[in-house]
Image (cartoon, rainbow, N blue to C red; front, side):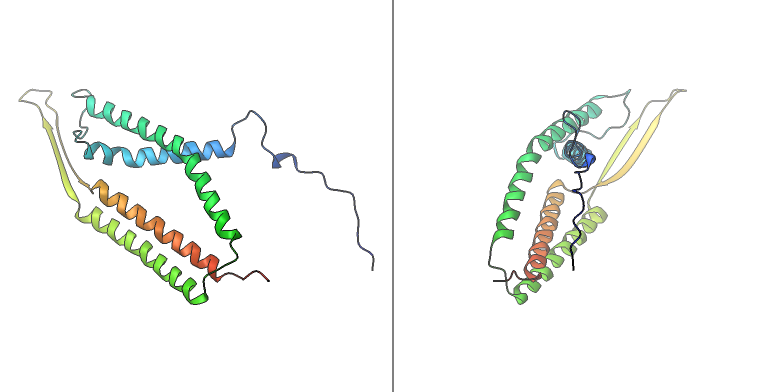
Length: 189
């Protein structure tokens, strides 16, 4: 039985990023930093005591403070992300290269505990959103023909609750990942 030995296949042109262009890694970093900035701006502004935005013409400072907070969070996340990704990659490589793995019972326990952490984080977040502190803002002008009135009610969960639930969710995901890795096929010795 003869083996087929055809011509060598050249590497694909799109397999390597073009030099000098915007790579998908940069787009991913900018996207994640933008999402984190958008999701945390209002909570951080409220925690810092900035009044809720009501009318830009009346008082533009709450909008400007929120814009400044979003820019700072965006810059911090964009700066810290390469370091965190490098540390995570190094930790994963050390775990994968380790010859020791947890026993099947320990791996199953890790998966159960990780799932419990994830479900607890989701339940706490639902509780905080449903029963969080209520923010009421009202703006009105005097008796004129162009009187404008604005009334808004919203629920603002505490920032610390968001941080704790995010940390619990990430810990649960890490435990589930370790359990899945521990229950996978053992390398041949």
